[in-house]
Image (cartoon, rainbow, N blue to C red; front, side):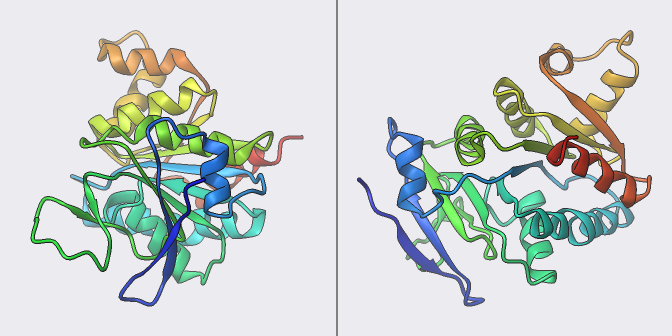
Length: 248
């Protein structure tokens, strides 16, 4: 079985990394990074582009005041794309702000990211987010190649426990992420008002009679989608997630 290896970021955070083989069994991948105990999983997808400073500040609070504390309280494992951008950066910062100890797992294409101690002059490689605890570097040379791996790894971690996907903002890659997570029957919570794909999906859910992209229409028919308006109370958002993770 392939073994994982540690990396150390400039902030002193240590993470375990596994280079995943193309046909690798996901159960063995989890064993390699010591994530063998099934736990509920929150999958965070999307971005933080083309939004106002005010909405970005509110999104930052959403992570530090709801998502990170809830993950800590409920013993969740959080999984995302692992790079130092968008929702992945917000999730890492949220975990840091509350001094969280919950595992934060990044799933990234091996051909597009660089390790913190790697010697490379390429400006095309993307940094990993430095507050994550585990990384699966999966086969791929394009963004979106990691999407099915992210969905599959999250399902493997969760086992019979609940898992939920949260979509914030997002573009074409988030559309692939959302599609792959709905394929494995993971409910999707969409943050309406966060822009781009999230708002497009919200519009499709609220007004299905209007003309929309076929890819988005397909999403609304693929599985369970719940909307939360970014302007609403964070207490309401927390209640939505608690209901999904702690069903009666």
